[in-house]
Length: 324
Image (cartoon, rainbow, N blue to C red; front, side, top):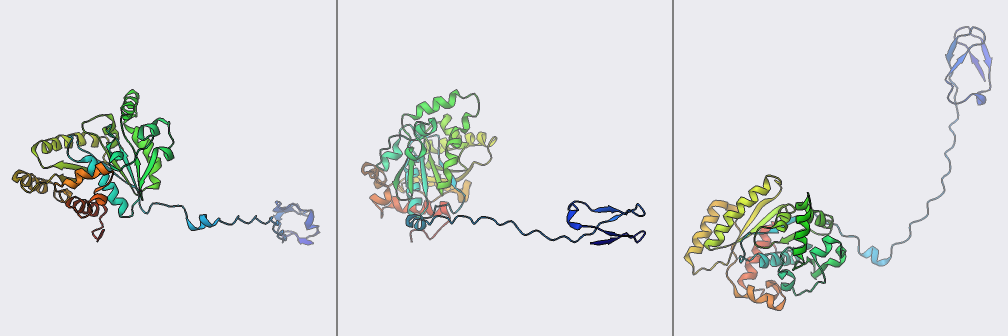
């Protein structure tokens, strides 16, 4: 190959194959000046890659049943009021069951030492929330499927030990429940948490986990007073965790024969507006259903109690056409 120096026009006969690819300049042997070396080079052919092995064919059951993913961000709903006897567990169970009937995947978590949620659903798990948090049982054994689309993480007396475990932590005890439940959320549309009466470390844990609160309030003076105290407690939690919000106020045990109950309902609606749900009317079927291990939708689907809880499901989901 002949290269001509641009300065003195001296010609050089070179073998371009012996010049390394990274050399960009040349020096003229006649005048000693440097000039850019522009040598056309052949692009080396791409290295042949070995063919990738073919992926193994899917089994028929794998092709027919793709892995499930939630259609939206999992909603965390706590059913809570520090006063007892207002229908928290009845509401938790029938809310979870109603959401499941609506096609939502629901995990019901019982944080009450009485463990009544599993009794109301007619299931007898060998463990529950305590055993999962302490590592005695893996989640797949602690969580029991109670109905189609409905799973339960049971409570019970063992929760007393979980409360002591939380108390012994030097820091971060209020996040114990959140750390245990958050990895499980990907499998559910809703996590409904039933709480115990009073105010204890486990209730605080619930409030550091859920984002929405549904508060049942029976239409009687002591319950209304307890609701006011509960709001003060929520405000103290919101100083540290603003995500938790009171979204739903559910009047319970409404008896049309009692004038004072109507007065209380009007006061709630005046103060809280759209947060107040359709009241749950006093209905004997609601108290009879647990004896048979059934929800009100199974035991008495045409009762006032079933109708009122369907209204609650419509409000919570924002789907007014459900069950029609």
